[in-house]
Every structure is written in structure tokens, then in C-alpha cells.
Length: 65
Length: 226
Image (tube, rainbow over all chains, first blue to last red):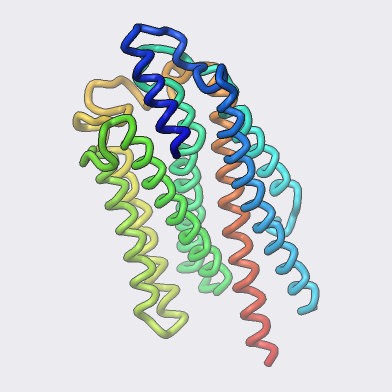
């Protein structure tokens, strides 16, 4: 959260000086990879949980027949 | 089909692709107002596209239930409605987060925001209605009829009224055609992540819904066997 706010703050300060390279601020300071890692972690963990539920249900279905 | 693995793996691959290239793909510079927050397009917008698909499946099964009275159709209808509602609330909250930084406040009373809130309330009422009845058959039948109404209300609230007036969202009064889908509105680079993202998030929603359906079927079988 602080990261996002800081980067937006930095961007707005740069805007005051008329900088045109705004779209790669996060990539130039390497922090975009942090955001990417966070999002991928969240998505992977959630998907793993869904896969676990899928497997549990498959086992229950097999037991019923 | 709901027990097949291939489309679930496809969903995972598409989502991993979205979550990585969504941050790495080059986005247009334009007038510097949105900057990199436009990347939200790969997360916020697919929530709504996926919601439309999920609610669409839900209403199809509602109609099937009314025609054939098979309980399994009601399980499908309810499961997809639940996941669709969750996606809708995710769309509202991710939109509010984005709006807070972009438009100055999490809620601006923008026509599309209001429309989406109303659409969500209409679907919440579907669950209240179902919960108010004890008899399974009545619950399913009356729920299915309301589901049809709720689905068709999505069109005026989300797609028609917001485009008739001035709006902060793309597509408001004064714009030409359908925002995002007319080929001119989105940079070609962004499109390479956007369409896979929509498919990936939609397939995940379908996966979660089918799990609930399978669970309800097992529960039914257990009760029948006792």
C-alpha cells in the first residue's frame, strides 16, 4: 500500500516537471516485479486451494460409487 | 465435462500469464492521467465480463429447471449465481480502489457505479428470496423465475442507462460505439493480455461454480442413500 502511494506521489512530482516517461516508473525502479510477485502469490495460493477442493470432491464422488 | 481437467489447467495458465504480462506489457503513454494504473484493465474489467458469463449460465439453468423440474438444474443455477455475485462485488471493490486514485473518491455516483450497485442488490434479493422458503421445489421454481428477471435487469443497469448520460466510465454520452470492443479503443499490446485475462478469470469462476454443483450432488446422493 505504501509502495503504491509512494510511486503515485513520485509520479505526480515528476509530472510537475513535465517528464514523459511515466509508464515505466515502476519497471525502472524494479518495484513492478514486487507487485507482480505479490499478485502471482495471491493467485497461486487461491488456485491451489480450489484445486485441493476439487480433489477432495473427486474422492468423495468416487466413494459414493 | 465439469470433472475434466484440461480447461482448469488452461485457466491456471491464462491467469499466470495475465498476472505476469499484465505488469510487464508496454502500455500507451497518452495524456499521462491514467499512467500505469490502466493495467487494472486486466483485473477490474474481466470481473464484469466473467460475471456476465456466470449470470448467463445461471439464467440458462433457471430456464432449464422451469422446463424440466430437474433438481440438478437448480443446483447449477444457484451455484453460478453465487459466483457471479462474488465477481460482481469484486468488480465493485476493485473499481472503487481504482476510482479513489483516479477520480478522487471511491464512489462518485457515476451512472455505471450506481447501475452496478443496483444490479448487485437485485441479485442479493434473489438469495433472500430463496432463503425465505423452506420447500425445495418452491424455492427452486420461484427462484428461477426471479433469476430471469434479475438477469434481464443487468442490461438496463449496466449496459444501457450508463451509456445514455454523461459518465466517468468509458462509453458515456458523446462516445461512439461500444467501449473496449470496437477495436479502436484498446492498444494492440494491451489486447494481447486483455482477452486471455477475460477467458482466464471466467474459467476460474466456472471452475469454482462447478465445485459447488458437484458438492450439492454428493450431498443429495448421501441423503438419498440413508
